[in-house]
Length: 543
Image 1 (tube, one colour):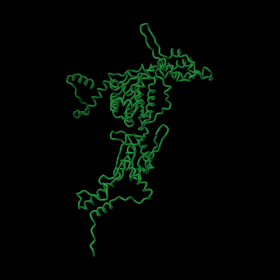
Image 2 (cartoon, one colour):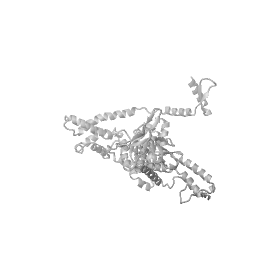
Image 3 (cartoon, one colour):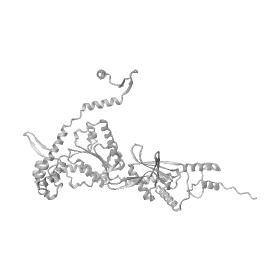
Image 4 (tube, one colour):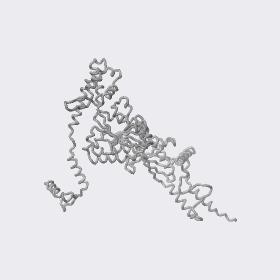
């Protein structure tokens, strides 16, 4: 009987590779074709030639490292280990520089646009039973919402489970994150999928280029409605308008030109002046300019977290951060540590915002700001918005009422009663403040009621007298506000300084065991020359 020929080394190697080739389970041919198409698309998007870095697929021969020459058992062990490693369940975690809802919306778009579906939600099992798969409604504008997958999602083309949601990144910021669990051999496709989501966030973010506001009690910002902001009905003195344009609006409108000229697109503007002069409206006008030019506008109301707004600016630059009433957190009487935290956050963020960062701040009490806020290099532009001059005064009234009514007004009489006045006592000439724009507008609006009262409800046409009568009542409100501001007690700077010193001492304090007694004391060091004073204070404290 002829002796059977032994297989060659190459044939044995081919058989080994075939044995360790992962075979997909039998599935519907059409479904399998769809899965393969999705995987192929991911590989192409990631420019991937092979899903495995340990093996190279090229040509017609099996080529192994020289150390395996004649060592078929060694080749088998290598392939066994390689197969186990490639089939091992592996977790791939990616944090995205986006808020959770923005990232979830990006993932939804990426899956539907490229693969036609967004995966299947997986029920979660708790101690109290099973919960159904989650989908969450996400606002993408003031009026629109979309439904996005949330929690655990099965994605069969990658043999993967996605766990999505809000996660803390390395800097402890709450961002969108994905934890993908799948066989290790799917890593290239998973990373390509991550790239798709990043592209969606970069190109089609729900927040970038929009007007949004931070909220202390919500991790997601809210959208701001700018539809009621009409630039044609906002009036400033010519000088103020030029300063606002140069300091805030021009850098947004002409960002590319400023970059060409080597000009910085990072600056801070302080808009200061009495209540009712249009400081907040300057912010909304800036929001219109920002959104029209692809900048993100981020509004911070008094008491809302400034740091969260700055984090949004880093994620969605170029950006404008508008902080209302900065004196609420950085006034001279505020917690000094909080002031330092805010200033350090402002100083640290300017170099981390892509494309540019403009910070606008408003205050009614510039005299009460902590001196550190006003130090050179921290504020680039200061714009004072005060009561309007004659031209602005007339423009405000005209903008607040129908044109045909404004034509019949006596502006000399109105200016005499409501505008700036010059008074003299024989030695000094004083420019007295007139009514602020907000009060002028309120007087015009209130005058409609006087017109209806005068005409028995027949005619709402406003006259000069109607406006002056309304202004009398509005002026009382203005005077009460001024009185309230004048009656505010200034911060006790001595007490505040003592408070700060005590805080610093207590931060270094060390509890002492008083020789077994139940009492506790604190120990700190002091200069020798201060010992008599310290001992006197100690005796006074101990009574």
